[in-house]
Length: 246
Ligand SMILES: Nc1ncnc2c1ncn2[C@@H]1O[C@H](COP(=O)(O)OP(=O)(O)OP(=O)(O)O)[C@@H](O)[C@H]1O
Ligand SMILES: [Mg+2]
Image (cartoon, rainbow, N blue to C red; front, side, top):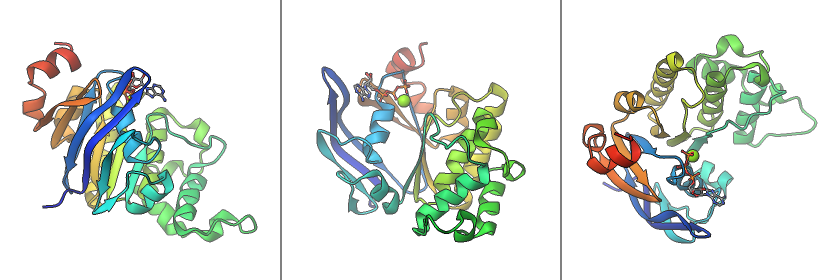
């Protein structure tokens, strides 16, 4: 079966630092891949290359049969890859509803300086996606009043309305209170399953990885040191020493 996402020889150096070291990677539709690795291992760099934010120095990225290696972030979104950020990029003075409206308007290309945003988008679609991520009650709240977990969920809602086939989430539970991590991930995974969206998520919390991933890839110094079922990768000797600190 052809891979949904495939990289071959993906390489990027920042000065003397090899942030991506000839990465060969395949992801199948339906997988929920956790990406683990110590700080600076190259996880975000990999995501930035796949989503068009940084160009690799060499190598190739294919998604859903297309070569996306040199595409810009907006083109990558149009190809079907959504993304949420390690630090959500929200307009803090906007409300939750306005933020989702903006994302939908960007999808349908009906941004106009002369028409109020709310008239360009379907109110029911906004309500639905906020319901899906459990934020319907906060629709009127300004983004700067949201706790971190809700900012992450809003960022994901804004990615979902772009109707991705693959959603890549960079540390969806970081900055979220310990007792909110599991409810947050359960909400996200349910929303993705309902829409048949394949997922990659960067995660430092071992319990979250074990509970929500079908597969784990461990990054060490810009390369994938181990890749496979969670019970195999989380018990790999190099991963235990270098990534998990056991
Ligand atoms: N724009 C940049 N310019 C120079 N070096 C960079 C840049 N972005 C990342 N790096 C370096 O590349 C390496 C990988 O960084 P990256 O942010 O991908 O790590 P990460 O695995 O996401 O870490 P974290 O868990 O802290 O988010 C690090 O050594 C980092 O300092
Ligand atoms: Mg990172």
